[in-house]
Length: 403
Ligand code: NAD
Ligand code: MG
Image (cartoon, rainbow, N blue to C red; front, side, top):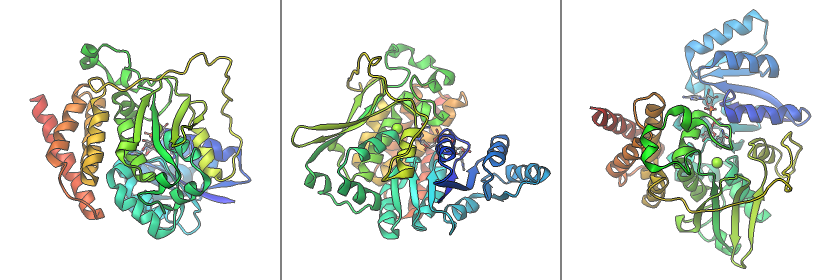
């Protein structure tokens, strides 16, 4: 029986993880669930899954949850605060930790799970974008087992030879690992989001409601906006760079609006291996949770008689400038991706709050990237300081833009 901790249990990935766990009660038990502020959602999850621990990062929310759980004589123990998130991720009884907090807030709890040598299921791509080199070094040192949840990276993982999969999990890759296995390229597929066909002169009027309405995937708000700007694919390119030790030049982004092929690996003999499936995160989550076995999910099988066309195109720079900023940042190195990630989080939050136009997200990101691209940050403290510096620079730029 695997004891499961879900960081970000009330979110989209958290819910899908619980769905998979509930289908296989003989394999998975829920040790702990965490959330930020959503007391109602957490209360429902606690009543249904009866975890030993529930952690709210917000103290007021934790207090309210505790009172409401006590009122129904629940045995779940409520903990509060950021340190409690890290402690629960490293709990001695935990076997498997789903890292599904959104944004930079996920870095420290995810690192705590890595340092405690857990099996870490990584959905929180921002942790790798923010601190890829440091993070992967910790995976190698601690003996943790890292499995990618992002559908593209999970697909790529599935398309790799078994020996290379083992090396990815333990981060025992070196610069020539892909070459030695005759891999020539990693191909990341992207849906192109809701604005793939929208005239460019209408981008300034795009509303948050339009931006979060993804045509294929049902996801949290931040990643939905990132998908609409294609920053999500940029963050994923950086994620792939670290996970698979792959130079940027060997990663190709291809728009594939149907989201049936989740990504591909091209080999030097001309073969391309792809992973296909419905756009439902339960598939990659179940794959990682049961790895190296496979388990049943409720995801309906692909029906090839209704799949009329799989199409592909290139992502235009004028339409998706954020993707190209991320590629530039990845070339610059760790500090540039830390700064870009922080800028983008602040810019997306400002867009969702109605303080910034959709087309201004890339302007803000470009400005902050230019300011901080050549900064240095290798150790954790410097990375966290740079993240804060980039957030401040972003806020200042937004205020200037609006003035
Ligand atoms: P979401 O917004 O639906 O959920 C986020 C979760 O994190 C919630 O449980 C929330 O309570 C918690 N949280 C938010 N801010 C927090 C903070 N400051 N401290 C502690 N907890 C906090 O997000 P999501 O769509 O589930 O995405 C989660 C992560 O998985 C993101 O990094 C995203 O990029 C990645 N991801 C998501 C999908 C998807 O289909 N949703 C696919 C691939 C990768
Ligand atoms: Mg993805």
